[in-house]
Image 1: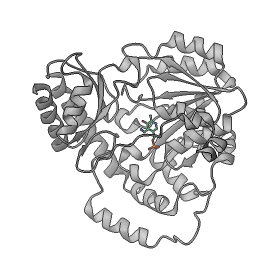
Image 2: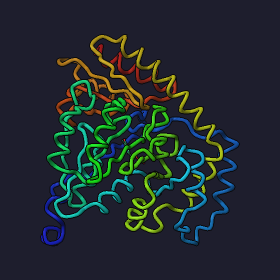
Image 3: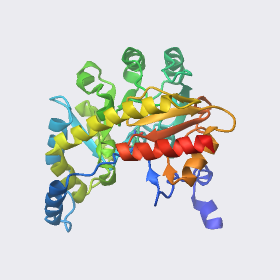
Image 4: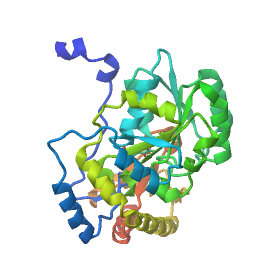
Length: 362
Ligand code: PMP
């Protein structure tokens, strides 16, 4: 269509859209959602609060009350502020736009979260991926060499990493942060922090070039779309210039403020999921031909054997049994024959295990 050729960038035309499969009727274990909802009395109270929200007004763009609550309840150290995003996806986009100087580069270990590369490219930045080691640990030497060569303005380290689930060695990360120095920022993406309980947030004041990014998505609030990033105030002020002024809507704001007043409920759910993760990992390890990788997140990465029961055939056999997980086997050579499954309730984990056993047998 000439109009599209005339106006749309060739690199955008060549892309395929971020694919979200239709999950209606499936046991949905593909997107690292928390399977638990709020207890009924809290849901009823939340409904009353939302009914009172002034939807005819724009949000107040300082989001002061919500930011204070996030800082108090979610472990942002005193003296640090946050910028809020419509999910951390938007924060990644804000960072990319703000740092997109001509010729600038973004770097991340691979395999990693796809939006780092996508968002960089949308903003006209070059993306450099540095392979992890085969055990998915950081290849520190390769990272340091790539940093020296490319001088990235942004380096992403997901802690824990998606889709591998592991925590990188913190000392290696510190060396990387120091090597980047004041030529770039290191974004430590702690989307899965509630399941890892390890964090760079308390270490914010040790480094002037780190941004610690989190989200409420994996905590049980994926639907409201809210992420936040903490960093040096002067740096945040620059990012804030790029943020669309009303990016967090009033319903999200009210829902997040309400739920954060009951943060103990979310903490208990995360604790539950950590225990379920251990049980699911043990059950998977007992199955023939399956390798389970260590996870500090609310998902497990498993590797299937090559041959009849490879990742593609097991993935589609699970789909036939109405269980949706994520086939990451083609995402990166290091992930060959790998599948990623979200840890869920005991009932859903059992449904997955039963379907997996039946798929391996068929
Ligand atoms: N970072 C990582 C490492 C993720 O895995 C995800 C979600 N898959 C995100 C960020 C995006 O989270 P959000 O829902 O806040 O946009």
